[in-house]
Length: 146
Image (cartoon, rainbow, N blue to C red; front, side, top):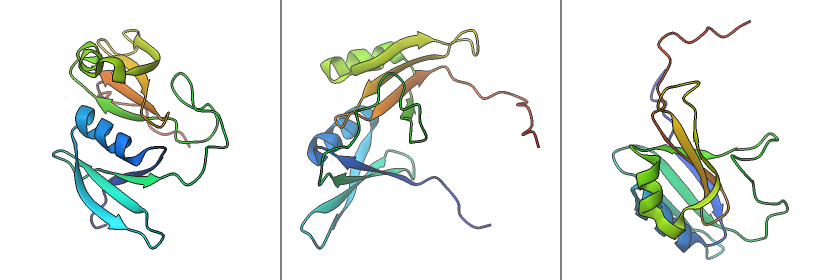
């Protein structure tokens, strides 16, 4: 098998400019490409620093038919949230100030993984973003059952 990496996630934005600014300011993304579309709109590609991961930003053409997610994301089949690891949840929340619209937490998951803490916030579009510290892989996770 050749190259295979997780490379992008496409977001349909209430405000494409505000979304780009938010992810660039708080999560290290930088504008990588702008692709004009035949209808006059554009796709803005922002790339996360030191990675091959992009967010593709599309401008919404209509209102959402469902309510925004709450807490840690939708409970039905959907994209539940996107997440970022940080050194300190508290430091990230302090850095973001009023731009950190908390939907749930911060919560500690020491019962599962010592030092694991998470907070869920809304991005400018109401998408749930998880910010975690201290998550560690399991040395020998159980095998997938048949």
